[in-house]
Structure formats: C-alpha cells, structure tokens
Image (cartoon, rainbow, N blue to C red; front, side, top):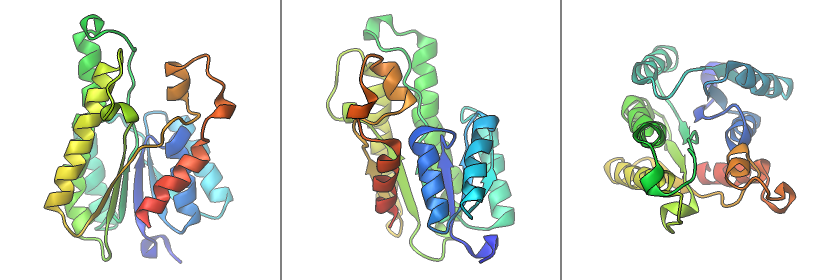
Length: 220
C-alpha cells in the first residue's frame, strides 16, 4: 500500500513517552504517521523505529507555541494529502509544581499556550482536513486526573487540562461525524511523571506502551 492510500494520523509530542509509542503502534496498524515535537533528533529515532518495523512516517519538528507553524503544517498536509484521519493531542507542559501564589505569569502563560491554545489552533487548522476524511475521523486528547480532581500545587496544569477537556467536548458537539475522545492514562512511567514524582518506582506504573495501546483502542 502506498503512503497516499494509508490512513493519515498526526501525533503531537511524538518524540518520547506515550506519544512515541502511539506513533509506533499507529504505524504498525497501517497508518502513515506525521510526527511532531520540538526535538528533531528524538523524532528521528522514532521515525527510524517505525521504518525498521516496516511502517511509514513523516517528520514535522516544530514548537507548538508557534501558531504560524501550525498553519503551515496544515497547509502542507492539505497540499500533499487533502485530509487527516486521526489527530492525537498528546503534547503537554507540566511546569513547576507549587502554590498558585508562587506561579510566575510566564510559566502560567507557557502552560496554557501549549496545553490549551496550541490544541485550539490544531483543531481549528485541521478541522477542514478532518472533515475531508473519507471515514469517521478520530481526535483523541490526553488529559490527567487532576482535571477533574484538583490537587494542591498542580493549579495551572490542572486548569489547562480541564480547559482541554471542555474544548474537546465542545468540538465533539460541533462535529458530530467525528469520534472525539478524551484519554486519561493515569499513573504512567514517563519523563513528565518522573519530574512530578522523582522518588517513585517506575516499575509500579503503567508502561507508555500500555497507555498507547489504550489510547489507540479509542481511535478504533
């Protein structure tokens, strides 16, 4: 099957953790996967793993804070494929955990720029391509337990994930043909989890591979 005939998926935060595993597993299922993240070297490692397993992928390294880059990517995908079958909104910024009174304006803005504004821009830019999908398009956003169960010192991150959930639920109401899902992986052995809980034994947590399999099951 040629790249043009494969279903097309875009995964943000695809350089490591859950995003990298989602990309690899989608490729194994026959998707052509567009890999996005800031770190080009790490993306190349994921791309190499996909190619070695017989899959196909395209690198699109850029910073999600760059609104124009999102628009350019949507334009490039429109010219090349004219559609998008699956969008996985995985990339996120945790920030430093601490009391709300101690959070800097700069950090608060950074968290909301990546966790909320970038996902809004992705949905807006890729909406025409998702609507052009021949079959039911799928959008999955990765959330966190703190979006619904507030926890001290997690304020900006928790608020950003609650906003993301609302954004996706609203999009689902506006795009009835799309399959819009919100995935909470729970405690998972990732770099973000390690930064939040540095003394935690990762062997007691869900693996990124397992989380990716659960997420992909929502795509169908």
